[in-house]
Image (cartoon, rainbow, N blue to C red; front, side):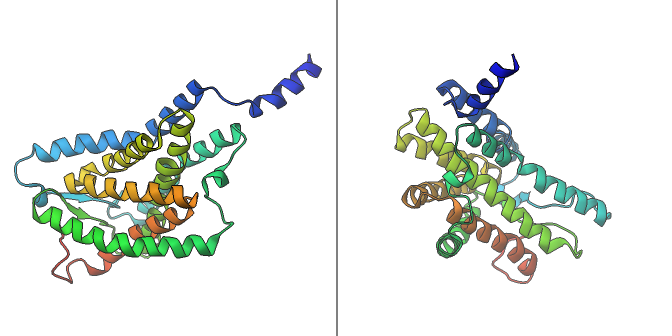
Length: 266
């Protein structure tokens, strides 16, 4: 029996999973991560639009304190949240290994650091400026809540946690919503156009808690990111761009809130 079990156990990881397994894997990954976030954002949006008052008079707060007045406990909760949010990425890596691939297949590695950094910085510069203008316009028209990127206490770990939070968002979203999802949808027979729509709508959906502006703006960003991923074959530049955008939003808000008139605050 032992002699027969060895070859079977060794050959199983190299067998190509069936379409049904690919479908179920994808649903599990999304159900544990950004698909669930999309449903949560929809419920939050319904609550906002049915609440008395306009959307711009309400606030969507990111990176809030988890234990006000208890900085060490707060730090523990912040690091716990950041770490556990990346578990779906580890699950994606596991599923890719089962089919003989890896995160490197999606272009998430350190083989091309300088091109990834350069391209990512270029994307962030273009999208960052247009994104701020779009947010301010959407809020002014009443289509968006006031987004408060951070509400952490003034403690020594504030800025490192904001940077880690930005990195976590970037890795989670770009690996799953672009690299992994497009790979799986292609393996399931979806056309490139349909897969692009699915990825972009998903990206917009989990930003719906910000309002219609957040949904449309991030959906447009999703279209651009899918196009660039297909052009370059790497999520690395997208992770860099997303990281820089979120770092700019989180840290920039912390430094400028209440000091400049054009930046809305809650």
